[in-house]
Amino acid sequence: MKKILYSILLLGATLSLTGCKDFLDPRNLSNPQDAETYFSGNPEDLRPVAYDAIRYIATEIQMLDQAADLFINPRAADDGTFSMFQVTPDNNDVANYYKNVDGGINKANAMIYYGGIKGDEDLVAEGRFLRVFGYYYMTQQFGAVPYVDWYIQDANRNYPRVPLDELYPILLEECTDLYNNSPLPAQDHNGSASKQAVAAIAAKIALAAAWDLDTDLVDAAKGTYTVKSTDNFRLAAQWAEKAINGIQLTMSFADKWAWWNEGNEEEIFSAQYDRNGYPGDKATGGHSLMNNYIAYFGNCVQSGLKGTGSGGTNVASAKSASLFEKGDTRFEGTFMTTMYNAPKDDGGNANWELGYMAWYNQPEDVQKTLPVALRFYAPETTMEEAEADIRQLVANGQAKSFATNTYGVNLPFAAIITGTEVTQWFFKADGSMPTATTVPYDEFYREAANNGTTVTKYDDPNCGAVTGSQDYRDIPLLHVSEMYLVAAEAYLLAGDEANSLKYINAVRKRAGAKELGSFGAYEAPYTTSLNFTFVPLDLVLDERARECYAERNRYFDLRRTRQLVRYNLEFSRFMKTVADMSNAQGEIKWYRPIPQAEIDNNTAISITDQNPGY
Image 1 (cartoon, rainbow, N blue to C red):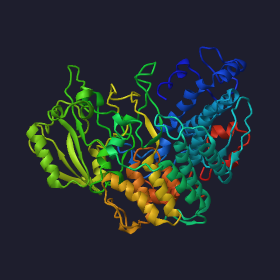
Image 2: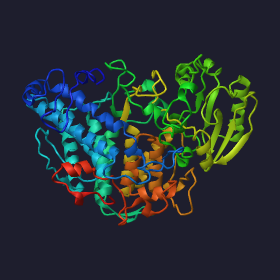
Image 3: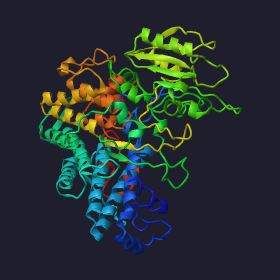
Image 4: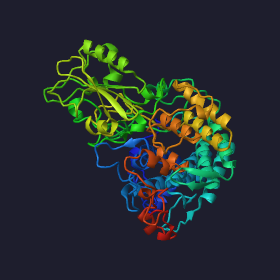
């Protein structure tokens, strides 16, 4: 996939929904007849264009992870428009999401159309998969959406919304045919469609269908519901097992996400990037996920740390910071636990390679000579263990604050976050042993350079600068351990707790967490109010939070399982009542709004079709 990724994109070929201006490239194919002639004979040139559309889904932050329980914007007045349930139909993020994902579906349809003209069954099958993939993301954000299974080449704008009870079966039938009858390969770990990827997306669609069609909400605040049928839940479990395909979770969590291990056996489908193959300015050709899900560390150029916006981007909430249980290796496999402050040049700029990147690019003996900007201990770490480690840093001369350097707010420091409290040690200018202080978590994230967390899942050791779109790591969108948890959720709702717990324990065992004998044996490591009573579904959602942290699926998880309101009431800093997540008529905002532009431009949709709450 990497070899062909930029071959046609270099020509500037683009597809949109406008028909008469579908093809704009140096070949002067803007004339539809020229385009028909060219792509009928060369439909494979549409392949990278259609796959490239997946990148938007892979990197969207706002709509996929906010309004959930795992992230905050600590230096901002609130947690953002989405987390505050203040999104409107004319919101640009909503409009762009709808346009880009819908446009990606049309690119897939073009791939199917021109592949069919040439008789390229492989290309047609890949296009069908990409179409289903796009519709999964559309339905989870907007519910019922227009379903178009042909390439739009005219000015028709009459596309009615298709109800979910009609649309989900269409998508699942497509998956069944692709899995049983298409020429797709059994597996592909390089970003192309495969039957394993078909099974994985089918599992997620069937699980969504089971919740949306076969459960009834009883009480939004309590997250209670009734199950009317288990058929789709069992179907989701079957598809998940097909996607798992007997693969055991044998590699460590850290190795699974290691930068040097892209395309490993657990990776089912991913958005692809290639620094060496990118033909343009490499500072702008990648993505910026490396600089998301992190705290704000001041002037990143001067400190050599990763840079983000002044408010931080989706920083770990108090729940996230204390989510990982004793022995769970996913904590260190998800967060950077040691960051270094780099030496500066005469201009006051830090050496990136001796700052944040030292963890990846410098040998251990060099790392032991660098001043530590932040040491972030796992929640299980004892005071004695932390202070022994800090004493070693003092002995090495690494725990020294330099007043002339710009490290950000109150850096450098070491910290342990446990429950609602943080124990921290601020390094001294003379390098002597600091004294521990304990503060409430809400004080820590406001005053101590936010909470210091930074996610490593997308770190690119070859990134040449602290900011910008210079991250060329592939972005996994479907992977095996998530399928374990899809199976666990599906079996739980189907009434088969034994099989559900089997898949949960397989994920926990790989992570080093304690295996559970029952759902009742689980004790959450984070703090909750007396109003929050744990149920078996919470264990599934906690495992998804630990295993799939920062993978842009948390909003889907909470909306799908009918826990969106309950979790916001418990864990949000701002949502205090159901009314905070509803409109004036009392309609809860379960979905994002249909964009006003879609209502204005689609003659089959009117304001009466708008989602409840808007």
